[in-house]
Length: 363
Image (cartoon, rainbow, N blue to C red; front, side, top):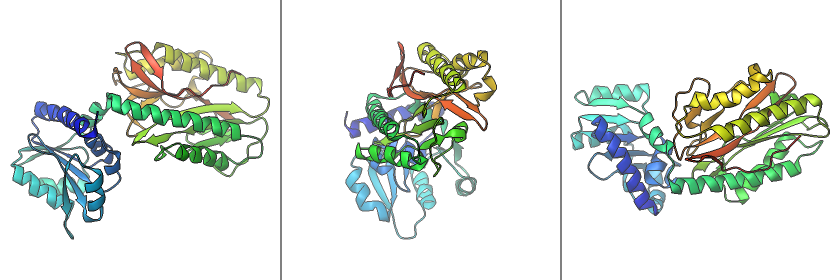
């Protein structure tokens, strides 16, 4: 499906929600939402605002600096350029008045912006509902899925390269650099997030980043990486042991692998987030490591690395067909080591389909 027809389809879905909630106008300030509605990753990198009236053509407001690029790259939307010192808030105000809108919704609104709009649009009801587009974006369409699959293939290969490069004496940031270089060579626009390469005691930090620490014999090494392709992200984690692992390392690894396997085989359409989380959490708790599983089982992924649905102990998010999310149980033993195994998956009527397929070790 071409970007023009895809954009129209997504705008139609949004307008259906606008009509249900009686909004005359919806204003997008978040780049991820603008990319979703335009079906164009090239217009998401900038200070843009998109205005969607209920019954007339959407408008993309762009700074003068971006005019030529946007008009060249975004051929499926009407573009209006901000002139000189013109403020975007003033442009939005004029357009709302021109449309005679009575009820307007934003996807994001700061406190100061809210004060400005409420003051100058005293007769207009103003609301902020980021969940409207987030809920639409939860259900991936086939074009989104194609981009996600490509991002996952890139991360799979990058992980293989990182693991091949891993050896005693190499620094964490060198491993990260090899993986990130591989991702860019394979077509990634950028990395999805700062690559994590955590060795030894640092693997017990869930978000450890990477440092100049050298890998030592006998250490645990946790690698968490992701690629961005056409605006869509992947997320993949593997944990390995350098040299001969201890019995404790092997035991913890097997518990995490078993927990992930239990979740992958049993999560299905209609579950809510806490039910999915409990599949893995109970396995880890039964083995005596419950207090060391210190985060949720997973998170939705797409135009943002973390988006709905959430898979956590208190999440009531309903899991639906064509959701894409991570399944990533972990055990983190303070000052010792940590193990996390993570895959990006697609939820289908038949259950989960892994989108990342990089080999897992079987200690």
